[in-house]
Length: 403
Image (cartoon, rainbow, N blue to C red):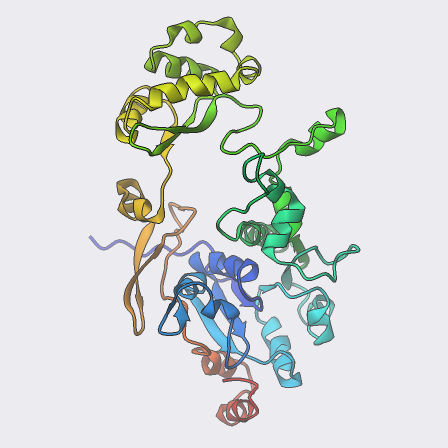
């Protein structure tokens, strides 16, 4: 039986992506994964710098093929008047513009929000920057790493007797991108369902990280508590830690729920702790967290990681191994949920890439093509603009405005 192809949730939405590197383009990728038409603008000759980041295959980053999948690549030198006029014409036709330039850059080119809003009052502009569009720091250069530092997460990451460290990915940029998409979808709902106008969404990298900081603000306000680095433990919640196993591997156990703690103590045959009133609730267990961790690890050290997980799973205790990418690639659950996908890439062949998150039952996302070659769609997009013919496109090419 032939099944009708399901539409992506965002089919019909048109996005103009003016950003580079991570935060803006990751937001654009999420739109593209769910069916939006995303036109990515890149500078001629060099393109988005991420084309040269991390590991390259024949001069192109493997990351590029993931970050720009499903997008159309258009080259434009935005510093030129001709390119700026093209952006204005495209702004009439698109729903959303994503940019992550330093605040004021688009305004200096004559294509800022207020200008484009006059052209298209329904336009939604997502603006991602280090510190936001206003405030005393707005003109400082901002990167995800700086946002992670100022947002508070770097201070908490690592061990108390060592300098702060970082998470091994660009967390600040990626979290900001998620907020960018959430904000854009809210604005689309306001415009299309409630009959409102367009608007701009102001996402600051440091604020995206700061929003994750749990109860640190009220704890400091009321009690002067400054949460410090705590290694692999979860402060104020016990037991929750990584524990060494017999084979030198680590198992992560989260037994901080009251019922789960009792099941864990039963599983490791410590009924004396299971029935002790002082461990009955989290506030009591926290006072003895180091002792409980030592008891749990004395048990894990008697078992291999695999054997420990079998026992913990049997007793419905949240536990898991610490995966490297090689573990992920072989994991049957990842594979069953299509989280590792095969993507055909020109001049490379089949490339395995991450699947799509989240999973929608009726309007799922899909991967149609890999990040394209530089300027692959330039002529196609420009010729769709009324009045742009072959002669004008060639003139732009001769001036180096497009490639």
